[in-house]
Amino acid sequence: MIVDWKLGLFMASRSSIIACGPRMTMVALGLKFLAGPALMALASLVIGIKGTSLKVAIVQAALPQGIVPFVFAKEYNLHPSVLSTGVLLGMLVALPVALTYYLLLSL
Picture 1 (cartoon, rainbow, N blue to C red):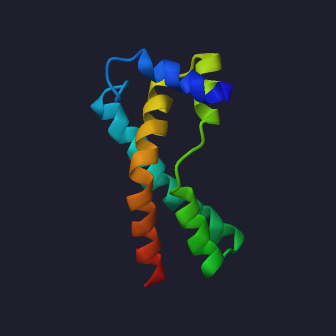
Picture 2: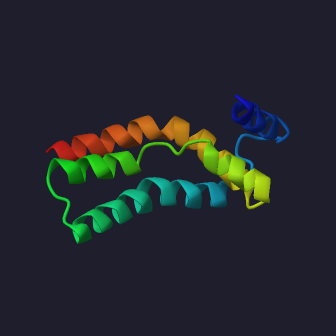
């Protein structure tokens, strides 16, 4: 419960939802929704995961991140604005992106 209001207070102290600027937001979303699933697919193939398990791993990599990385970023002062933007926009964008990956992989 404390974790939720920490993010809420941090987001409320910002003047906009996108706290780190549009360029860094695009980088963060690109890393989360393009590079993350690509790295998951590569790592899964390297260790021999195939078939349905590979598809599940790729879709899981596109799911939104939890709030815990934001808490650590805020605690250690390591780009909390980027993480807060990533958490918020990641939640909004995750459903269509995850569905797109699911549909593409089910073909």
